[in-house]
Image (cartoon, rainbow, N blue to C red):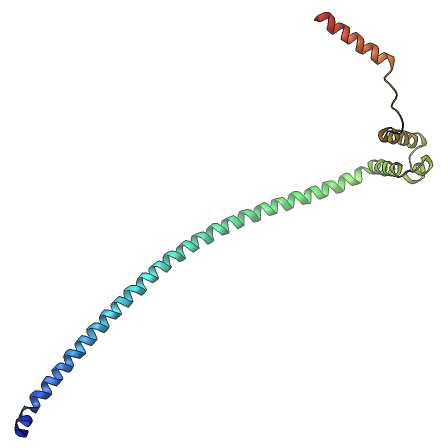
Length: 166
């Protein structure tokens, strides 16, 4: 039996080699198939990511254009603010008398008298007295005199004319 096995040894070795080659071919085929599936998966993922990147780039361009527009508007607003600040400074310099009268009004409201107004605000005596009188009338401390008879007479003549027309 040993002689039979020895004579068949090359045939057995050939069959074993053939089985090994077949197993190796099946393994290689499966490996290539798995690699193909994996490669397809990664290609799909790559295409998806490329599309997402393109969307993000479009959004970035939109945001950039909005930011540029906002920057221009901010610059315009800064120019307007600067112009207004300059104009305010000009008006403050031009309106020296207005500031004095505003100060005099506040002083009267705080209880200043004629002499204080004359000294602090450099107002003439007649203007200082007028300021005091006006502030008292505004505050209700003095009564406002009634309208003169001339104005009442003119009003009644106007109403008489209106009655005649009707």
